Length: 386
Image (cartoon, rainbow, N blue to C red; front, side):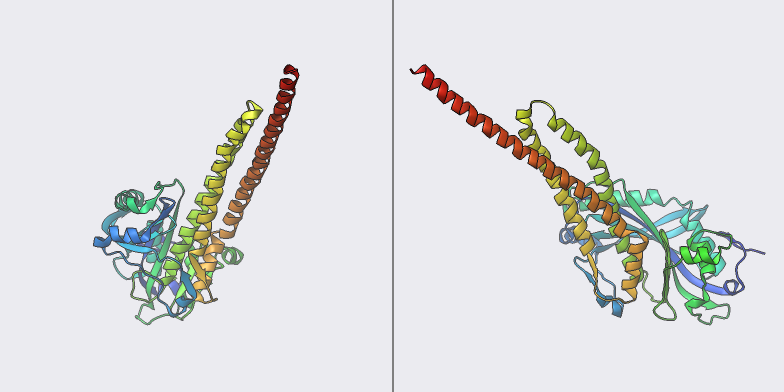
């Protein structure tokens, strides 16, 4: 019969996972664009009473990761979360990035050791049907009220990112003997990461779960588009794998935000170009001047922030964390988003060059007309003086 628990049920657990016991939890991430940039030094001073920290990954191989401006990590306190009618005590925290992003995190610990099937049911209950959004909205409003002096061009964008990391700290059998992470197969994690109760084909599993990483015998990271499973015996509440996944999600948000911004900007630009070309030809140069300035500002802002985002974390070697970070960017289609932004910026640059040429031609034409009028005036004056 299917295993059941207070969290729900999981159909058809394998013989291996039926005897597998875990202790862990889940972290829900809600990531927001809140402005053009954030002065982290000023933010640290503002939040000094709340013990902000500038932390970085600590694993030995993390030396291969270079972070230009370490984000601020800030505890926010505790709250109560309801998931499928069950109350959970949760810990809230925030991570603040200099490129205008705030990541809110909600850590939900399981109340006791569980069989794997129970943990899957817990994960599914946390991943759907929870009332987390009002908690995130409230915490974001409170945080931004404090952070306002440190945020340039503050404004919360409509585009957001959400991600869930399921964390397992211990993995052992019913007798308490530690198990290697290889004890969990792709078929075992499909219900947790993909939400599928029916068994998937081998081909589907290969396609949907290709990103599986392990460094030691007791750690494992499996990544998907909207969640990940991280097995790590480290005592810390947050693992280095979670750190780089959060960073990649923050970068993805910025790429999505500027892609959406440019999508909205292009139709407006076409309308402004049509308006500037209308009316009396002789006055186009003045109308073009404001339009060209606006286009130049859009290109400069977008290029600067996208470059800052991409340079905020650099990988110098192909080690465990670096491979996870690269895989996350691949899953999130970072290159595709960047290519879309570059293509739209190219359209704006080409339009700018075309309008600039037209403005130059209009100035040359006005100068020629002025010269002709002066010559005609001199001739007329000479004729009248005879």
